[in-house]
Image (cartoon, rainbow, N blue to C red; front, side, top):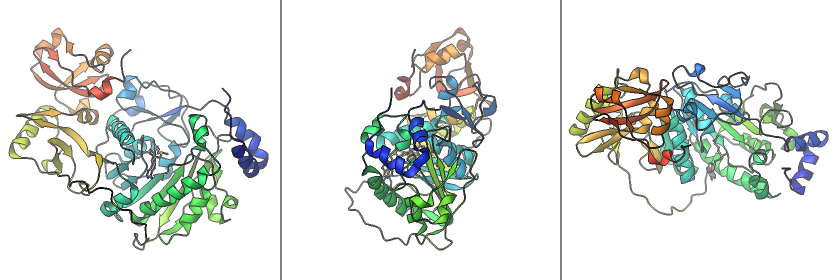
Length: 467
Ligand SMILES: C[S@@+](CC[C@H](N)C(=O)[O-])C[C@H]1O[C@@H](n2cnc3c(N)ncnc32)[C@H](O)[C@@H]1O
């Protein structure tokens, strides 16, 4: 179906793009280019079952093509579907394992899952999403890829500053925007658009960025991106950032073939704005993105005077605690039967609401914040026992585990629909918890009792399967 573009949108881009405008408008009527990424956190990730015949040159883990969201490979976090232009943002961030990284506007997690892969389990990723429902989806996506060193929080950016002032090596602001690059994917974005909308979004972006700068360490890097073409939200925001005392300079971004430079003439003519990158759908295979990268000064951050918002309500201080002696023994017993080599030291574990989390002491205390995932959930203590969590199964490889049951693809399909499994062969095995694996991909823990594998697959995820 032909997309009906608003007249003011057409006039605006006719003016800005001049001779290129017809090609730009035509590209918005074309089909989207589908792509996906492989997950380097998984063992043998390069030999996953998927069509890898069209690699994306600027993303080492990226490929053009469509994946099946219900496939074993997707459900066990080997593959992630993502717009090819959105994939360049995390590449630009040039993450090194061990860094402390904030993804401030993170749901549903396209960039966070990529950033977590680049951290390779070292350092810390804090993924924040302001919208609670979206934050839960973000947590699920990060769980699925088996990320161990990620905190998922659900806060307004200004509320994060007290906890994380000057803390991060890198902050990504993939800002809420007027979404002009989403027109092809989501025609509702066209209906939402008005000539005034980019300026409204820009005001919100400035607010978010003000908080982002405060959380950057001196000399750290800020990566700013949008999926819109509006100069008000792109070059003009970059120009505004360049005027900030905290920003030393705008860093050049490598332009691969068909990537455009920023347009200084669409802001204040500062030539440095050419360092930004624009991905236009009439030049580039993808929906469209704008990316800019900034270096913070070596001086300390956090000098900006911000509007102080009134607190709506004081929420109670959440309590993380150390394990009790009996919890320690339940956990140690479970770990001894499961792990070939135990990567969770007791000192790195904390209990919150009877749930056990991998949350090393070196990580900042997030108990004053709303959060969705305070570290990797390992399991829950119930009366006199420990039950391992789904998220631990996704972060644990069959090759690292002692108690594994290998299931066929048919059994996997039944199990993820919530069904128990009964097999004669199970009767030979001792009762207890097993890591369930299919084609060497772990997907859940299951409790075996007298030959029946009870179903422990999370109820909320079961509904998404079925034939
Ligand atoms: C472009 S989307 C992020 C996409 C995500 N980075 C990804 O790659 O999957 C922007 C996100 O910002 C969130 N957001 C909206 N208003 C916000 C605000 N005032 N502060 C922070 N985030 C906000 C939206 O809910 C949305 O999830």
